[in-house]
Amino acid sequence: MRSTVVTLLSFSCGLVHGQGTPDFWQPGGPDDFRGPCPMMNTLANHGYLPHNGRNITKDVVISAMGGALNFDAALASLMFDQAIHINPEPNATWFTLDQLNVHGILEHDASLSRSDAFFGNNHVFNQTVFDETRRFWTSSVLDPNQLANSKIARQISSKAFNPTYTFTSSTEQFSLGEVAAPVIAFGDVFTGAVNRDLVEYFFVHERLPTELGWSRKTSVVTLNDILRVKDMIHNATSLITEAPPGCPASKRRDLHSGGRLYQRRA
Ligand code: HEM
Ligand SMILES: *[C@@H]1O[C@H](CO)[C@@H](O)[C@H](O)[C@H]1NC(C)=O
Ligand SMILES: *[C@@H]1O[C@H](CO)[C@@H](O)[C@H](O)[C@H]1NC(C)=O
Ligand SMILES: *[C@@H]1O[C@H](CO)[C@@H](O)[C@H](O)[C@H]1NC(C)=O
Ligand SMILES: *[C@@H]1O[C@H](CO)[C@@H](O)[C@H](O)[C@H]1NC(C)=O
Image (cartoon, rainbow, N blue to C red):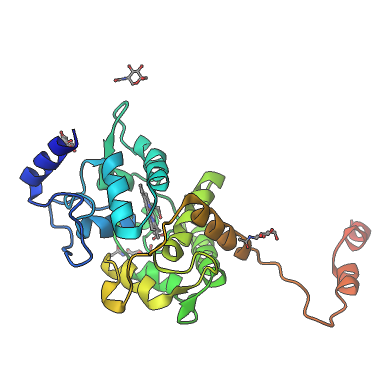
């Protein structure tokens, strides 16, 4: 079965999945499918996924994510299962990168590097949008706070200016995973820190940042790593802080909040 896939693919594009390497890199050409996911595009550019962006099966995803990023098979398999319904064919066993472009299924508003579908192309890298995101990446090592700030800023911008802004609680879960993803691939899954240059290079070039000194993690990435970093980002999305030390927080609460003041006015 697998050898059949390999044979057909090598006919169609001369490059077989599973032969990906950090050294081989070629952007998609006019007949190659690419989508809204900077990492899926990256893996196709390196040949870890079929370079033409088609016939992405579970086996292919497992070998690509394992080979490029050291994801364990269970994690890669789960990610495939969450995406396969994007192929409208019943019981489909593969999807293509351009199927990911359909707005409102997996693709959503307020992305870090793509325009909302309402304003234009929802799946190619958009420098204007990415510049908005980068404004919140204020130091050379990003942390969950900066990543969360950029996510919220993009949502505020969409909510303010896109009359069709849609962001469900299920979108929120995917979005937190996406914002955590750069940490998963290029950063520290225990502190949530990630080098900004690596992240920017990846988004802009859709290429693994090997020439900046990055290399595949030596420890296997599991679902627990993703859940931990997602939780860090989620925690950092809160806009509420502790009171500064020494400030009589309880008094302030009496003055400004609560029923009393409000009820008197009513
Ligand atoms: C089966 C595997 C995967 C599928 C089907 C997939 C699909 C998608 C889709 C549809 C989006 C667009 C969401 C939006 O509208 O912003 C997206 C965004 C994203 N994905 Fe993936 N993805 C996969 C794996 C990964 C992996 C392994 C990483 C990195 C570790 C990753 C990193 C990202 C990032 C950073 C974004 C956000 C892009 C932005 O907001 O501009 N993805 N992905
Ligand atoms: C690859 O996908 C195309 C549709 O995009 C399909 O027609 C073809 O049969 C698939 N090839 C393999 C090897 O699965
Ligand atoms: C899809 O799978 C279900 C459950 O296995 C089966 O009942 C159904 O006939 C399949 N549909 C097609 C079009 O193969
Ligand atoms: C980039 O995104 C902005 C904001 O959504 C949009 O106005 C602009 O047309 C997009 N640029 C391209 C080249 O699609
Ligand atoms: C997120 O916040 C909760 C509640 O304060 C805390 O229990 C949890 O450990 C935090 N998660 C991470 C990963 O820091």
